[in-house]
Image 1 (cartoon, rainbow, N blue to C red):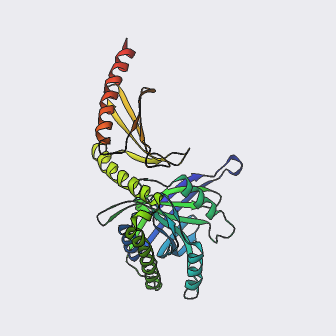
Image 2: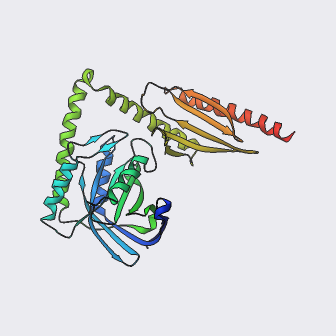
Length: 326
C-alpha cells in the first residue's frame, strides 16, 4: 500500500499544490542496525540513507538499502546531533565506486533520549535547506525519526521534504520493512562499529576521571534521567500527552488535557532550556484563564508537586464554572 500526500508550498509567492502517491521500502538490515545504535546510546544518533528512488508521474518509490553512520567525530548530546559531514561525504564517494546508481536519499535520527515526539524546528529547517540546495541531486528528501525504544521495538515517524513545496508526514501504511541486504552493508556496519568503539573509549576516559568530566555532560545526563522518569509517569497517568518543542527557545514541554464536567484543563509542563539547576514550569489553563503557574523543582518530589497543583486547578475550575453559571 502507498500513501497520497498533500501539502502547500511555503510563501504566497510560491503557492503550489501537489499530490504524491509515495511508497517506501526499507531493508530490515537497516532497521536492525538502527535499533542497535539506539539501544546502546543515551544521545541523539543518526545517519544518512543510501538507496534508490524512482518516479512515474505522481508515483514515487523510495528504497532505503543502507546508511552511513554519523562518524567517530560526531558532536551529539541528548538534545542535538551534528554528524561528521566530511566523513560521510568521503564514505559516500567510496561507495559510489562500487555502485554508481545509489543516491543519498535522506536521513534518520533519534529523539528517544529527550522525549520530543516530533521533528524539532531545527530539524525541519535543516532538511528544508538540504532539499532546496543546488548541491542536492534529488527533489525529495526522506526522513525517519525514532521517537522511542520499547524493548526491541522502535517507535517511528516518517516524513518527505520536497524541493520548493514544503513537507508532509508519510503514513505508516506507505512504509514497508522488507527483507534485504545491500552489498555495501557490511562495509558500513564495520565502519559504524569502529566509530562507536572510538566514542566509547572517549566516554570511558571521562567516566574514569569523573572529577574532570565536562559540566555540560553531567547536566545532559541528569536531564535525560529526569525526562525518562517523567515520560513514564506522565504517559501512565495521561496516555494522550504529547511532547513538543517551544518555538521561542527550543525547550521541550509536555502538553495534555484533563476533561472536566464543564470544560478541559489545558496543562503545559515545560523543562528549562539551558540549565539543569533551574526548575521546570507548570502552567494550567481553564476557560482561557490561567489557574496555575508554578515552578516545579526537578527532584524526587516533583510528581507529588504536579499532583497537588492538578488537584488545586480542578478546584479552581469548579469555582470558575460556578461563577460563570451565575
